[in-house]
Image (tube, rainbow, N blue to C red):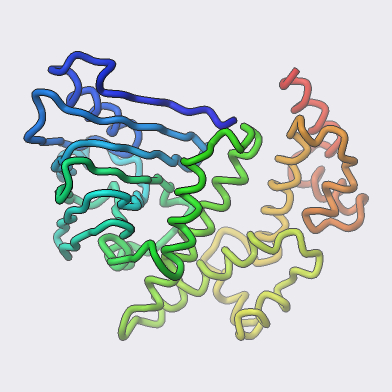
Length: 325
């Protein structure tokens, strides 16, 4: 099962509970100021699933005000997007550019880099399922972050429902997953968030060409991740699936850190390396893992792997599994 970090306020003296949970949230998300009418006997619980680059957590707590100030941001900014599914309760988020109210099964989107006040209430018990995604995994120009943060998103329909359903299932039964599933789960979460962001950006009125370009790029990246296993995944097939020309697809990736083909190759290699290092797949032949991730010819996979990492797939598997013993 996935490793969990669990906090229960009743395990601490009443006078220490709010301060300790504030410290815990500072490590899970970002340092914040917390205020509550129940500070003298604060009740809260939290379960944190570490998926590597992405963190998913669920929490139950009494009504609070969460405040992220410019001073706190200057002192510490982990540069993450925060998304919360409101399961019970509600409240409002206040930023310089907007104020948004939230009800059960709304998705709340925030950024560790923007000052904000978040007021929870409407119910004596608040319940959320949240995740933290590094901005580096979802690069957006500064001008677009404000369109994402605070956007009103329903978790009952469309892209919001896909993300809400996945998060709810994950925290409900973490025992169904193995530690080796962590990077796969992180990739799934990131893809769903990227698709949601693209949907939000495209839904706006009078968006600039650059906004449409970034939204399309996010959607294409999500498409590539979900089709890595297909050996026919090429720039031509990707362009056709998105009703654009191949030359325009290449122009979209001019501002990225790799060409379309190089990006596909890198993601396939990373996925194959994860499987080669998975003890549960030690009996699966290397050529089968290579074919699963879009390398139908074993010799091509071995040559590409050596060029990228300086070692053969066989040596990588041997080293990785030896550390697991």
